[in-house]
Structures are given as structure tokens and as C-alpha cells.
Image (cartoon, rainbow, N blue to C red; front, side):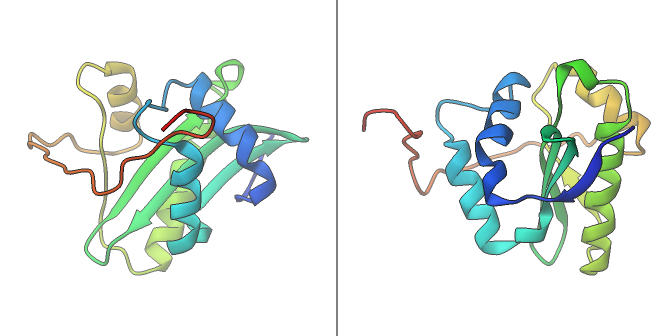
Length: 147
């Protein structure tokens, strides 16, 4: 892997959002730019990018609630997959979470996404058989969309 791993900079926003869109991580009900701003308000050092030259080739977002860490928005550029970018980003996120005293880390994978499950199997994650529930407290209107 030839990419540099560093903390996200606000100038990276549009390139990061484009990578997330390319990787199929965005959803119409979540404004990715709002996700970035919310994240940076709480844990600015846990939004991490992989950069090759002036190109963002990977991202990961992590969070810590005092009980467990979470990983979100792991992505690598389609033409760079298989180079270890995702593995390196997960390792960096784990390292930063551990430095905060985080005892465990989890993530969510959409059902049926066996490629992603297989990746996390390879980097030592254990599958759990749990149900998830959620409730939206703020309805996002993605940038550029009508209210």
C-alpha cells in the first residue's frame, strides 16, 4: 500500500463524499456532509483518510461511547481494492480507539453483504446474531435536495 494515513481535513469533504457514493455507502435519508460535521464535533481525530498524492483512496469513521467503539464508512476506491487500504484503515481506527481506552469495537453490515462480512472475518471480527432497532431524531435533507 502506498497511501498515507492521516486525519480528515475539512478540505477533503467533497472527495470523501464522492468515495462514499462510489462505494455505495450513502443513503438518501442520511446527508453524508452532515454526518461528517456531526462526527467532527465529537471525535474529530476518528475520521481517517488514506491519501495517495492528492487523491482520497480510502476512509474510515470511528466513534466511542465509553462502552464500545464503532466503525462506520469504511471504503476504498474501487481501483485500489485488494491493496490493504481497508485493513490499514481498520487497524488505524482500532489503534486510535484503544488509545482512548476503548475495550471493544463493533460495526453494522447490511444483511446479505457477504463480501463485507468476509473482509471483517479476515481482520478478526466476530459475527453476532443480534437484532437492531433505531429511531431517527433529526431528519436529514441531503445537501442540494428540496425540503
